[in-house]
Image (cartoon, rainbow, N blue to C red; front, top):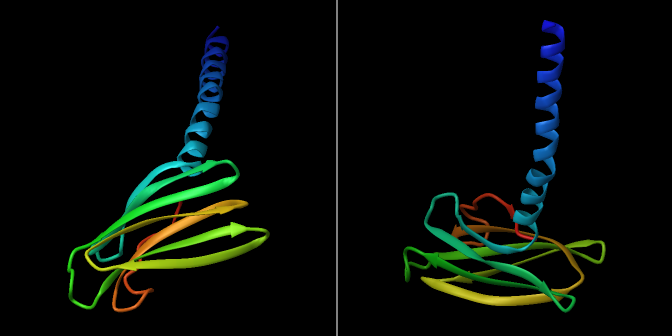
Length: 133
C-alpha cells in the first residue's frame, strides 16, 4: 500500500511539473521576443538604456532612450545593438550626452541583443548583453 501511495504521489508531481512546463517556456519566449526592455545599465551604473522592440509589416522596430548621469564631462552613454540578419551578425552603437534616444528599423532581422556602456570611448564600462528580440 505504501509503495502505491509513493508511486501515485510521484506521478502526480511529475504531471504537475509537466503541466507548468509549457507555460514557463512560453513566458521565457515572450520575454525575449518583443515588447519593452530595460533599463540596462553600464557596468559602473553611470548610464542606462531602455526601450521597446516589435515587428510590424516585415520590419523589426526598436525604439530606445538613454540617460547618462554626468552631462557635459566629455564622457558619454553608448547603447550597442548586435543583430542577426541574412546569415550575418551586424553591430552599431549610438552615443548621447545627458539624455538621448531614437528609433531604428530593418527587415529580415532574426535576433537583436543590446548592452549599455559609459565613458570616453564606445567600449568602456559595458554592462551585460541582453536579448531583446
